[in-house]
Each structure stands twice: as C-alpha cells, then as structure tokens.
Length: 200
Image (cartoon, rainbow, N blue to C red; front, top):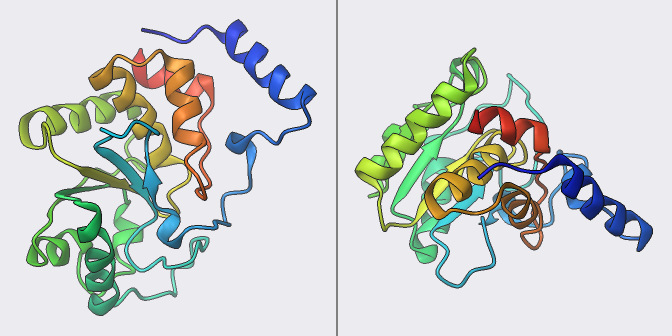
C-alpha cells in the first residue's frame, strides 16, 4: 500500500494548525531517551524497535574521532536484553564501523544477540538494500523482536522501520510514518518521499 501525498499534507496541516510540533521535523542530534530507543508502533504486540548505535548513550552527531569501546557495545546489549531484543540490524557505513574498537555486530553476537549490518549510508540503491533487510527479516527474524539501529537512530533506521511496517505488517504508508515518528521520547524523521522511494 502506498502513501497518498495529499492526505499526508492534510495530516500535517491539522498538526500545525493545532499548534503542535511535527515530531518528524525535529533536529536529529537530540533525544530524551537513552540511545534514542523506542518501539516502531504503539501496538502492544510490536516486535520492531529502533535506536542509535551502540555507544550512543545520549544522542550525538557523527565524530570520526569518537572511539566506541567494546565495553560500550556490551552495555548497549545489556540495555536491550530486558526489552527482549533478539536481533540487531545495523545500518552503519564502513567509516562509521571504523570508529568502533571491534565491529559492533561481532560484539553483539558474543552477547547473545543475533546481529548483522547493511550499509544503508553508502549503498547507492537504497530501495534494493531495503528489500535485502526485508528478506533477512523474513528468513531469520520472523516472529522475533528486532532492533534496527543507525548512527543517531533518527533517519536511516526510521526509514527502514516505516518500510518494514508497510512491507511486513500491511500498514498504510502515512500511518507507518506517524507511528514511527511519534514513539515517546525518541527523535525520528521520515518524509513521505523517502518512504515512497523504498516502496517503489
């Protein structure tokens, strides 16, 4: 199911006319939640979550000189386990992974979390990579709780979460965007155009 741009504009008009701030337009270097962590939907049966990368206890913008230690990744895994996270899908680029003492997927696996990474930042064909993530979800993580993370947890991971809500759970696109962007305490941004590109 694809979004209707006119209906999305109508939703946003209601938000602004009511004096509310659209959560999809917030600056992405701030968050009120540890790791910018939160569910993809407010459904009690939700199995999709999003966050910033391991090591980002508070939302920080990219700094290649910040080194993320193994201990910080272990703390990230420890934080995720009480939430029932069984799979962690990273969307980091090679340059971002280079800021870790060891690749985060390796450390997360040692902590008992199935982990993989798809370079959504550098890969030119983002819709094709989104479909690879979808194939992974269907083959490896069906019926399990999955965390999708990127550098800050606000853009790449948010786009993939919205895409997965549509592709896996038959959400209408505008509802998927609304659900992802309004998780309490998180700071996420997805535009209708970004989601439409992934669904093409």
